[in-house]
Image (cartoon, rainbow, N blue to C red; front, side, top):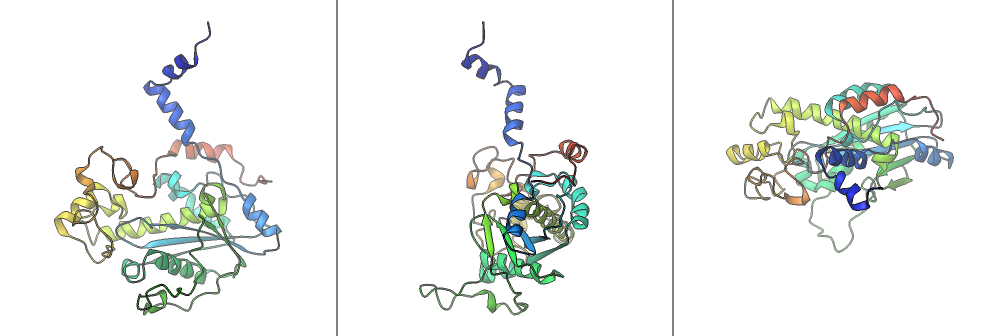
Length: 308
């Protein structure tokens, strides 16, 4: 007799069943250049796809990657994913291929003291401007992940405190680049759009390298592993040594009287709805794809196959 729905559900609740269900649910849709090509065919010549990393970290810069594509750009290298869905080894293996593939690319940063001065959104904009300023070409359209255009500067409205610091109060602000007049936002673009995912990978690899290098100068926080996010070892270092010059001291830092002490929460529910396995990165979980899956993608996908 055929098993009932309840029996089939129960059969899948064992360890193997849960793993299979989790794996199926987590398997991401492979990003393509469909959206980028649609925008290019609408009249744009050069499209800059941008994404940010480090926005939720407690220390280190916020970083923006940019990848430029045009109508002649072939499909992205096999295995490209949003950086959150790739292990560090997979990202490091993919980054050189992305740099060779993209007609132009760059990465920009805004440092903790800048974040403390003007706030995270303005600092994010500054990092984006710095990335655009490095490009050897001038894009006429930008594609951003999310639903908010954080790249375009808008004058503060009348209700905003006129004495509050703005981006232009930073002493080392470069001449702002000519931000394209067309800025398109797309929710989950880092998951669906290959050029945005590529920008995410390049930004993540460069920012991770910065945090590993800075860990040698500030060895108490475990940055070589947690990259500045609120992992328990980072919180323990904050409790023991307090914040350093590379922390975002305007933030409510855990371990020094700020957020709930993540190191003592164990497996209980953490701030922002995270679990103990997620605190390495408050906004980025890195375990959805493993290296074996990444290698399978390299074998299975043809980077020159058109996405249309």
